[in-house]
Length: 142
Length: 292
Image 1 (tube, rainbow over the protein chains, first blue to last red):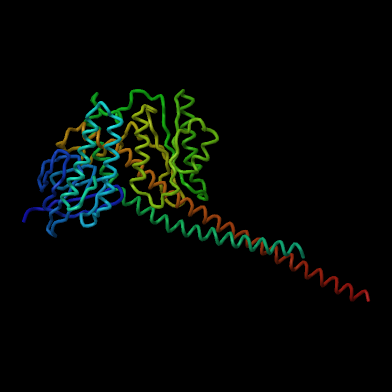
Image 2: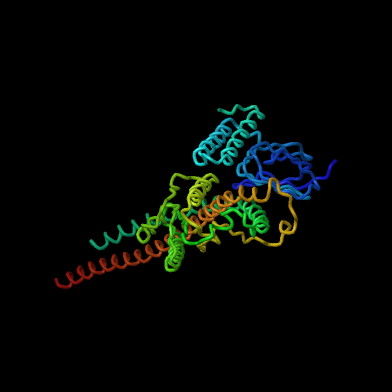
């Protein structure tokens, strides 16, 4: 039995989870990473994706978008702008999020015509959403 | 006799006023509890967020590459005041206190030769500022339709503010709202949100641990600073919501008590004049009988 660490998942509106876990898989902006007890202190921003938490009481999954994770040797706190337990995630939620990402993309295209940076970022966000939807078996409306 | 009738009507009307204020007080008390719970629930996020941001800001802040949201535009000529008030009245001095604070601030800036722009959130603040600062009002966010404050509302306001910042409309933004202390006291606050200031540099674990950053520190900071604005606005809105209900509760409590006092004194007056009328009638009858 691996050692456990403290895990907190908070959104601006409430604290979604606070428990002892063995590992947390985080959808980082530069790629997924799994944090376990004794991980070197790291701060990473999140991309839209699934956060998988494994603990003594089983595995739970959350859909998170935007925010960051703070990993220390003794715990992980994830601050997500929007976080929903995977079981509560519905097609409507996804549609809403897709809609938001799409407007951001088109807006970025308009405002930054000659700068690829922000447009690419918005496109990546949109692609991440689609990938996450596929992964969960929901269809992202294009 | 006419006098008696008037008094009776008066008492009846004050009694129904008392019923209304009593009901409003109880509604405010129930809403206050919910508003406080919401404010309580948002605190962990805001605290962790500020702690991390304080650490980041301290390590990146000095460099030239620091984002404008943190280091400022290099001047402080144009100030934006974001004045957050309530949509409804009947809450004592709540709105007036916030507006007063904002006015003092605006006056200071104006006399120092700065330019002032005002963005109002909530109808009551706009109504009060409209008269004196009509030219400075650049926008208004209507919250009438909002039944339950959500983070999305704060994001909307933040987007508006950040859009104006990116367009170079102002250099410094200050947020005005009231923090909830208890039912009788709400303190108006002025909080600078752009350039961002993080006071929470307390020496907890965050300050001493050296973190790896993924992607780079600068990229994280650039990503998080706009979110920081939204977070600050969100906590401001929640504090305001709790303060508003608290202020309304004590205002309505006072009103109920005043109505009670008024009813008492009116009742005494009514009884006295009723007795005077009876005495008068008796005297008339007796003196009539004596005359015979």
